[in-house]
Image 1 (cartoon, rainbow, N blue to C red):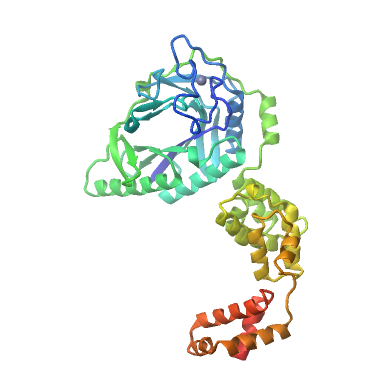
Image 2 (image 1 turned 30 degrees about the vertical axis):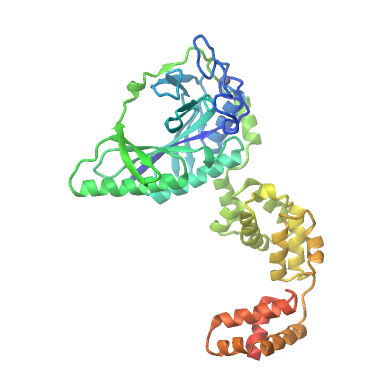
Length: 449
Ligand SMILES: [Zn+2]
């Protein structure tokens, strides 16, 4: 199987691509963020291209290791008729970046487009709030060989877009995929709006084409739609040729030129792309690939990690950040940036665990409070009465008490029920108020039993 992707994502800007209308199209009543330009009323002239959108597109192209067009670029009109497109054409630029690479998948080109409005037949409504919001389109070569590879690529691409700070991420994504099997023609599937959707569509389409080829039926070149609710693809139309769109350069818009100075300045300010960061973290901090990926899942988390490891052993910090910190953030549906946890907080916390001022178990309870409390980890530990680790004697006393109080668990243990031991460990934790080291406790309990 060969598969290529075309991914559209909205660029993060305050105003639209060719007018001053705001871009918060989902927060306002239908047809309120509109003007004569984005409705394309007769005689309306577009403003020059939004510079922030252009800069965002250039930054994303550079983060995808693209070459930047060194000649002028400009917008074309792509003609088609649909109720969400009052002008009858969509403005789409020629490539701004080309010949890039993301983890071995070649990026054919990156260009800008304007978003059309939204046609909602079920509501009897056409809403033009979205008309003219800047989009970036990223087109890959057909370098992916399975639905899994396509999914991994999309996840990585969304990370790059999130890191750039110039795109709206998976929530605004629309992807088209093209897929062909050996001996078959190329089929395009339109308008998947999540990574999961793209993956399911590819899976379905791969099986459909395989079955046709097996029966000796030809796979026709066509465009299909993915029906997400049913998880199937259906034929939309036979493939259009480029000439059907009657592309012409838009005479109302001035050409654009990315000056070398501008590109250098973007390169200076742009963050290290996540896929490059993963490789560096593996090498520099000796992290396993999976762990490096978790730590770099968010730019702010990765930056915090690099601050923290100036004072804390990298492996130890990585262990707590990827397991416990990520668990707690996930549970609270928070990003690290939103949690208010600072690198200094993490250093203070990790030092307490490292110096055995608190147990591992207590550490887990403290870190759970860190995103919801504004107190320092030490203040939290004191407030929760978790400072200190009890000595072996106290653990021994607590273990004896736990055994004496729970004869049923003891006999379950002797019958080979593993859960009984965990129960007794829990009792010791309760009696020592979480200040016994679990490893130690298990050891002492086993000896007594
Ligand atoms: Zn407007």
